[in-house]
Image (tube, rainbow, N blue to C red; front, side, top):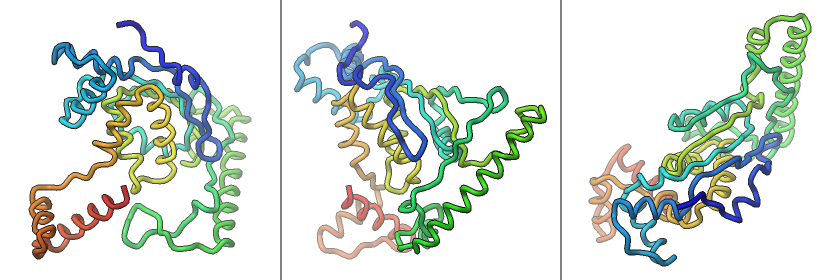
Length: 278
């Protein structure tokens, strides 16, 4: 089987798609497609299914039953630009290959993330790492933005002053904040991409990384539309219950009392709530 060339993907290759106020996602290259997944699977399962309908059925079968190695045959390379605090969440996905711009070698640009007013919120009372949906006064939103911008300007001015004094770049950079934009080339196969997207597109993920994941999902879907449809159905749009939760669910559906209590009950109810929102 030759090199995959997908017209929809070729049309967006090397184009920057804006994310947040100064960031972007750019699909640099890809290897493989839905066809590569199918052909790889047939090495193990033998030939037989040939039509589009049967190819789609095979891909769904593979993902539904967690036969994931054929998805490793598809690889994506992205060039992305994001705030450092987003990059530090992103890099936790250690199955990727990453090459990031270095402040030891390069002068970092005067580019910082400042959230839009509608994205500024209070701390959530029931989620230690999330934002509240309660309305925040507009004057406080503007004060937050002003404080961030003033501090960013001061820190970058100090950074520039140190560079002007010929202080080593690796030292001058050390006070630059998490809001500074960084860039990297990021490569990942489709199997691990599914895991990245499941976690980072989740409603509980921080908004600033979720918007990057959503743009990556859109671009990957151009290369592998069948596989990504299967992902949306079997992974992103699914809810996993433990054995005890399945027992409780069966009892509740039969009109009986839920035996779960405490934290177990809370987790169960969150899953039911999330499932309704999918």
